[in-house]
Length: 401
Image (cartoon, rainbow, N blue to C red; front, top):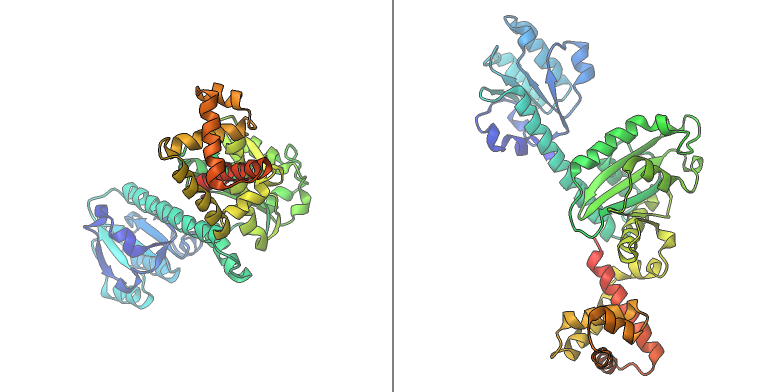
C-alpha cells in the first residue's frame, strides 16, 4: 500500500505545494489518472476513491466557478489528491480550500514537471509499493499457520481484488539455473494479455461455454520467480490437464523455465497449501531438471519439502552437517559435499563417482568411510538412507523461498 505522503516525499515532487486538505496525506493512493474534459457525472464515474488526479483544468480556463465545481466533485469522490499544474490556475478560493479540508482531500499545485511525468512517477511508485505489499503478504502466508478464513480472504483481496472465490491452481515460475528475478513488467504483460483475451482461447483450453467470464488470474513477482494464481467461480468446469495447457498457451514455455504447479484446489482456505505446493513443485523441477511438474508428481519430495520448513528437520539436517564438518578438516566441507552428492546421484557406484569427479576410487571410498564413521551408521541401509536424506534436504533448503 502506498500512502500519499510517500508519493509527496519523492524528490521529483519536492516543489509541490499542498494548499489544503493536509490531513489527507496519510490516505492510500491506488491509481493515477488525468482529468481533461470530464465534468459532472463523468467525473463521478471515471475518478474513483484513492486516485491521484492530475490536471491543468484547461477546459475551465477563464471559468473559475466551473473549475471549482470540478474540484468539488473530485473531492466528493474521495480521490487521494488533486494535483493541478498552474498553467491556467495558480490557486483556488478559500471556500474550495475549506471544502478540501473538511473532506481531507489535498489540493496540490506544481509548476516544473510535465503532467505525463507526474503520472509516470506516481504509477511507478504505486507499482513498487504494491509489489512490496504483495511480497509481504505472500511471505506471511508461506510461513504462518492457520490465520482464519476472514483474514485470508482480506489478504487475497489485497493481492488482487478481482480474484474469484475458488483456487484452481497456483504455479511458481522461475528461470532455469539462475537466481535471476523475473521482471515485474513481464508479470504485468501476462496479467493484461490473458485476462483480456481468455474468451479467444476458451475452446482451445477446454473452458466450457461462457466460463471465461468467471475466471481471473494474476502474476505476482516473488523472490527468485513469480507466483501465478488462477481462480474461478466454478472449478468443476475445468479439465484436470487445464493448468499445464493454460501455462503452455500463455507463457510460451521453453527449457529456460522451471514451473511448479499445485495439486490442491478449492475455496480460499486451500490457498496457502496451493502456494506452498507450487514452490515445492518448482524446487522439484530444479532438482530433477524438469520444465514443469505438478506437486503430486514430485515423488519423495511430497514429504521432504513440507518437512523442510519444520524445526525438526532443520535440526536433523544441521546435526548431520556439523558431523560432516568434523569429518572433513583435511578435505574441506564443500569438496566433501560434492563427493556425497555425486555418490547419491550415481547410486553408490564408486567407479562412476570417480569418473565424474576426476578422483581416484580409493579417495572416494575414504571420504565415504569418514562420513559413515562420524554418522555412526551401523549398516549400509542406514547409511544410504541418511546420505540420501541429507543431500536432498540440503538441496531443498537451498531453494526454499
